[in-house]
Length: 216
Length: 121
Ligand code: SF4
Ligand code: SF4
Image 1 (cartoon, chains in turn red, yellow):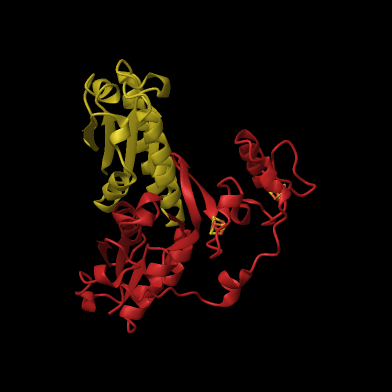
Image 2 (cartoon, chains in turn green, orange; image 1 turned 90 degrees about the vertical axis):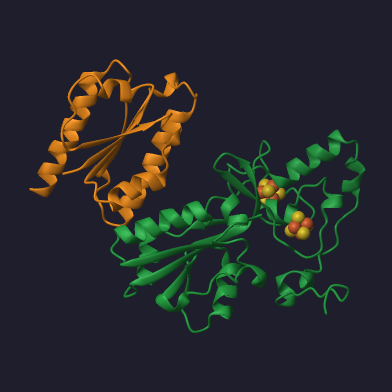
């Protein structure tokens, strides 16, 4: 899922300066699961904004803010000065496209693509590089989980299974080694990774996908 | 002055019943401390409470195991929100109160009323 985190309230109230009629728009999908911008968080944020002195704060949560199909319920926008989205950056942009005359502000910082490891713990797993290599790395992503995105790790800083960049972080290459060793697949590491073609990632510009079988 | 007191019915609620409640108090009975949510605390302030107390079991003695710890964590989170929007976070407090602690219950409430009076003086 996409993992996000609410911005500090000071930053949010700063964006909303001078606005007295704010509609907070949540999303029922990723940001609900990571407890940053679902219906509950919309209610909490709206309540905090009222307590901070904003006169009229509405609340609306759609199924998926990144999907036009679900933005239909947002119609009575006339009574608001602006929208405050608690979706990821994708939802914020789609709302802005749909309602170009209304300012749409982001209430969250979109952090990463990751997993829910435990109650209240999320961590990064994928950087959507566009050309997945998990088949060769024991299902552990060195792009997202090695601090240096090394393809032929570990680096010389790997210590006792921890990364030299941050001792709280497991060395991804140690994880890869351990997993492949346990599976008896260490020979995979004999093959050197060639430089990755980053044009499939952000280096190739914004990416798109077209499916002619689905398009009309 | 209004003080909303969220009480776990297994502990603080029993303590609350051991004596007269101050007129300022609105008691809310919860099946477990873990039922209280951040939104409940903020709503209490929105509706005019001057102070909010969340009183639950001792953390190692919660019938639902983690209810009391959840309540404390949520209070901490809600206090951060209050701080950020410029409301004194001391207006919201969590305390463990067991069922036989009637005097402690009344002391916590009295201290909060006192603190709020001082703050508004
Ligand atoms: S290799 Fe690329 S697509 Fe696969 S998990 Fe890593 S970043 Fe994501
Ligand atoms: S210690 Fe491991 S995870 Fe950290 S940068 Fe080196 S190879 Fe990558």
